[in-house]
Length: 275
Image (cartoon, rainbow, N blue to C red; front, top):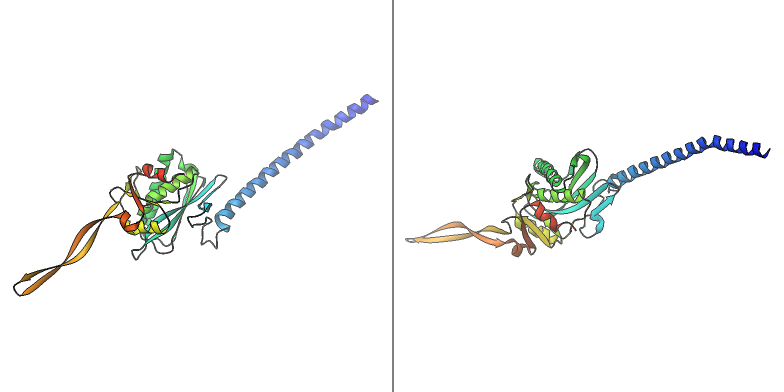
């Protein structure tokens, strides 16, 4: 009899094993599904729902807190201060926000208050290729979201090319940017940085934003201004006067109060940004 009871217990135990395995497997699948749904919810919440009516980015764009960088799972979001000039010729500081996540190479651009939209689009395409060359990463495996926030109408987008490339590199490598550095300059396909205008106005904007170092293209740490003067000559009893434009070389550092450094390429400039 004891042997029969033992055999019966073993038989019942073997009969229940598939049921227990199925329950364990179902629990594991359920747990994975819940984690996936939670991750999707957190992504959409952080990217969209947590913004103030969709008008303000998730990051705190004050240049003084660690909230200008966010890394969650496979998603990286960072903000970078970029100098610009408004439609009245005044320098101002804008914010470039870059979001990178696993994907298929798609790019979304969300830019308000910006003129010369086509120039900005082309700069983003060039900056992405430069970032891919420098990092050696396949950007076709990532999706990118670029946003620029400005409090006024900003003229042009070409001068943000170098900044876009640097921010893209930092986002791909999941690295923070040095908040005390700003840069202006176009970006070329080989990573070289091209000249821009309104250097002094942008340098003053960088200074006002709290930056300590302002990077500019080669030969643009000094600028030329034209001062108006009146020159008069006497012809007989009459004075003949003309208005002349007299060139004068000036130091951007002296005019703006911020340290200015020339850089020739994104590769050279990025070492001042990555921390």
